[in-house]
Amino acid sequence: MNQMRNTAYRTIEVTPIAGALGAEVAGVDLAQDLPDDVLAEIRAALLANCVIFFRNQQLTPAQQLRFARRWGEIHLHPFMEGMADYPEILEIIKRPTDKRNFGGNWHTDQMFSPRPAMGTILYALQVPSAGGDTMFTNQYLAYESLSPAMREMLAPLRTVCIGDRSKRAGGPSRKELLAASVGSMRGRDPGEDEPTDAVHPLVRTHPETGRKALYIGAHVVQFEGMTEEESRPLIKFLMSHSTRPEFTCRFRWETGSLAFWDNRCTQHFAINDYPAETRIMHRITVKGDVPF
Image 1 (cartoon, rainbow, N blue to C red):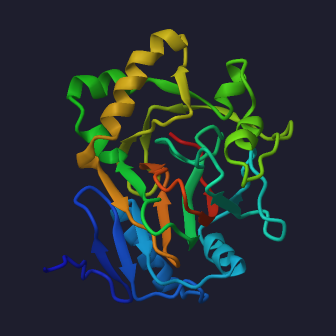
Image 2: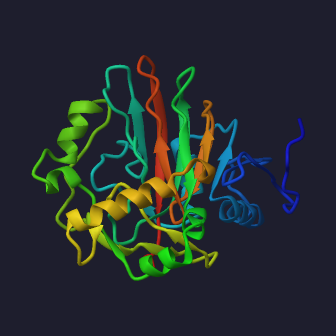
């Protein structure tokens, strides 16, 4: 079977995995301190494909962090404890005793922050024998496939994004929910100086490509100036529309795989279908700009 390869690169090979988004990148060792020209080609591949994947990488936490810092300032998660020696890295663990997984809904990372994550870099240390895939969806396509009248209606809307929806609704905090259902991970309460609520445009312009994308995800609770009840039908429609199968790709992890996705134009979903096995990943998020 022939594979379509993008030959516009000099130092890397880029092979799309789906029609909507996603590509595997070969010919690069992320454990090395990469030259600027290689990094520029990786950036081009990311911008063209929204999410890129690297196989057969052998990375220490320090090497993964060095790669991540080439992209910008590291974002510290206000609700999660990082690794003891590397607080910038979240060790995402699900063991057979855990009832839920981390990231098991459609979302874009740190949308509740005034400066949400530009990108997320996730590295697989241990994966189940089957299952544990991650799905991604292209929010450029989600926006562009809407009717002109719908795009016009959505243009002025802004979303209210909340980091701890359960606590806001009078229920247990994220830390308490995590302890009860994903006991292998350590939650924390955010400090007073850590913002966990934000308002963003529903239609976001990508600062590098200039393309417009829907900016929607699980952190959205309502539209600015509307009640939650008024907002709910449109949010439900947009979440369903933005995750249609033709906008998505699915990545099957192997030990040593690394995914790098652009949160400015994607959502993702970690599938929880491996109840009797363990999955361990190292995640770093790179801080982005203020959406416009």
